View 1 (cartoon, rainbow, N blue to C red):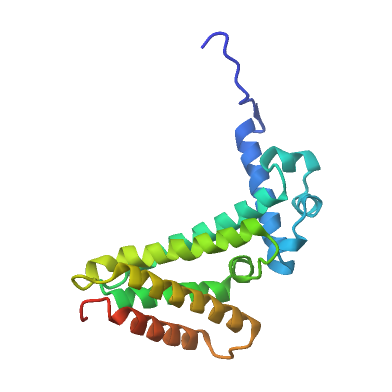
View 2 (view 1 turned 45 degrees about the vertical axis):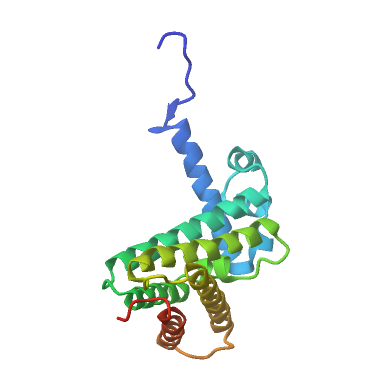
Length: 212
């Protein structure tokens, strides 16, 4: 349109927006590496820029301050894991206990295979209000996910509030189990964690489900 200017100049085959998005990915990737090795408190603007090979001004092009970067990293790691859980639950046998076990197995194997994501999502976040809030929101999100997939199997008149409380207890305990496993406090193979967590989950869910 005549008289309208855009900021989409192309350099080296990439537009301004593409190059900005690439720099943002570089910053997030650098933060994931630092966080995965040293914890969230080690993620600094200068440290991330140095690892990404970018000057400081490119940090503020994507993030107003460090907290925004930390939240972006958490969201990316959490969204990837949730997508894995949804895929495996959807593909599992249409049985709520089988779906639960599939979700547990996926998460446990992901923790073992992706230590950076494990530290980001299951490490300590004390002292950072934004990350603590994300942690609480994640518990609710996974609870909602399990209830959504389990609803077709509820007994008539099942107490959904009771199920929600039981699910929160189960997920909270599972998170602590994963932390203890990662710290070496619980010394069992991955399958031991999966078997035990699935058994406990089945016990917590039994009173709310149609007999399978």
